[in-house]
Amino acid sequence: ETYLLLVLADSNLPTGSFVASSGLESYFKHSFDVQEGKRDAAVLAFVRDSLASYARTALPFVAGAHRAVEALANTDVPDSNTASESHPPTLNSLAHCDLASTLTTLAALDALCEATMLNHVSRRASRAQGVALLTLYAKGLAPPTDGELLGGALDQYKLRVRREEAPGHLPVCWGALTAALGLPLARAVHLHLFLHARGLLSAAVRLNALGPYAAQQLLLHSVRPLVEGEAARGNEKHLSAADPALEDALDPITGPVNTWPLGEILAARHDLQHSRIFNS
Image (cartoon, rainbow, N blue to C red; front, top):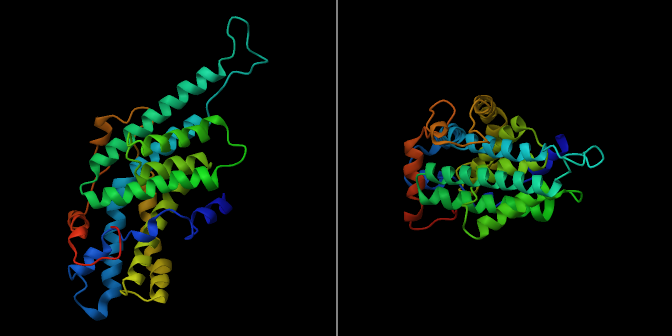
């Protein structure tokens, strides 16, 4: 498990996150860092608000997708040696049924995730990173002994995304990928939030808002309690893997919510900048 965490935390993984600033570039272009000597504080304030809002928006979908794929991985298949003549083994039919159900659940979660994202810039960045994760699993992370269920589920879902039958958003694809790799949900949630925070600080360095040493200091000391606090709260947020119903989505306790309207406005204005270096 520790080794898997190290692999998934590798900044060299081709996930597309390097070109995303999650609204930070727009934040600076709109002069929210007005005091030159306090850019560290401005970046930390952005990370805090962005992380809190992202956790409440994305983690229900991470958890829902993770539970759906995890349930598929734990599917009980009748043993051909113990099956009676009156109840013959139906491996193919059971696998097909469970696979179809999982794909339907992922698509429903994905459609709901699309609806909760309020601007086209966030949707675009999330889709790009989501399909990159599915491609990464298929080409680089799937174990050689991967069976038809897990490998087939992610491959078929990637095909749906390519056909534009599903958007393939980052939280849903992250949940599915980590479940397929056997990473526990709590670890997947914690790592997902850490990567979001690290991506923001990496973007701040490339925007010349922070130096690399200052960014690492913030990540280790100031951002760590933020990530751990949101991860602890995030474990309480989920959408039902069996039935991601509308009433679950509208629940202010367990469903996805947005807590930072300013962040949405800044993200939506990203494409209006005269010049930009990030995709979001």
